[in-house]
Image 1 (cartoon, rainbow, N blue to C red):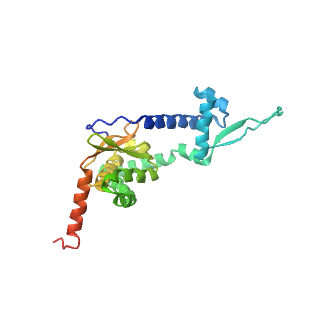
Image 2 (cartoon, one colour):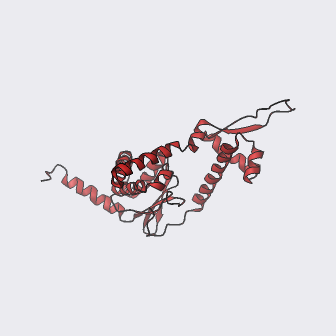
Image 3 (cartoon, one colour):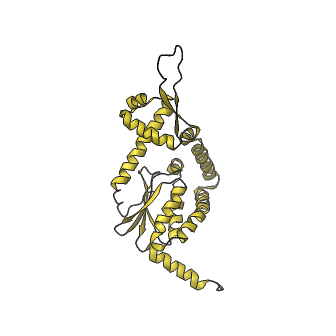
Length: 248
């Protein structure tokens, strides 16, 4: 859910360029999905790009194992010269477009909501994120206080969220440029709410969600106030000072 608060810091030119490159690359892959194996010339014509631009995006997609090059099948009499090279989606590439798991997850959460109510959906979301958070906590605890947002970003990136951390005027912003569960989170914002709670707990301070991909924004953005480092140090000190005491 998008909250009103600090205005997001404008992305750097490099981030904007990277976002545009990803968007065009996705269009290239989608065109192959919709039209089948395609030549560079066919893709350039359909997408309004230059052949050189298409080749650049195809090179990246081949590296990521999303598409693979092969010789074009020729039906009937073969003409002189080598067959044209076409690019087709790999199994990995097709999986990236397969949203059947999204549909299954959304159906399951709707069933939970009907049977037990929205509170149980939230309980599921929290339990799911708590499990993920264990791996994130190891990375954050191993980092210096001033580097904990960056450590969380790297941990999220390893899980497919393409996250970055950057300085803001009165704190830091954690940006997730991809969300593997965005289609489900559109219907069940509890997933975003649970994630925000986990970030707050991991960093030891209140954080504010400014934007989410599920809400229609281009990037999930979370604001981390400047006092987060101090708060985490206070929590660490408190834990150390009470270690071994009887809580009674």
